[in-house]
Image (cartoon, rainbow, N blue to C red; front, side, top):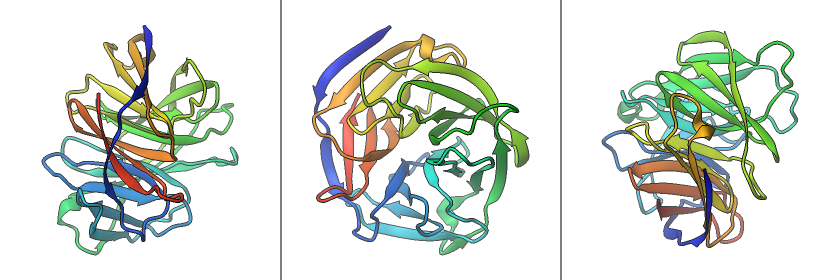
Length: 254
């Protein structure tokens, strides 16, 4: 079932620190109010913890990493934070990386990551990813394409592995490239982000996400939104890149 709701109110709650110009993801750890963000490829190998005024409370360097194209963040129930280094605008990349940051809340200025490297199945064309989340100890990654998109699965196991194809999907309407994703703590609700809308997915079974109920909610503003995270069951936090007057943290009620 696919439903569209037009022009839903998105509330601006803060402007992020001006040092952050290309924020590409947002995540909130369990039992915390801090909003963790990263920047796009070519920026520092850092994760930043922001309070709800947009002020940087922590800036942590991942010592054994390289920001090739960092695109999304996710977390597990143990509070580990994961960076998805899998952006691939050129569609030429063959190797992708997920960095696992253990006990990130206790880190001060530097941290060493555990590393998951993956490639795509044999004979699969290179894909561009900008979004993922963890479900049942697996990462689910969503390709960023204009029309037909795909979901791939990667096990949350340190080391080298090959991603598994899960399914193709098609989202109705225009401007359907997914820029970030998250799943609620209870695993019942998925949100996929685009610059001008959010898709809320419910009533799915296992990883047949797109056989569930899909509700597209259009925002009442359009900006380069690239980060989404559940704050609670019914509220999400959204971030965008700094273009003109953007670089904001938004709150949106589902």
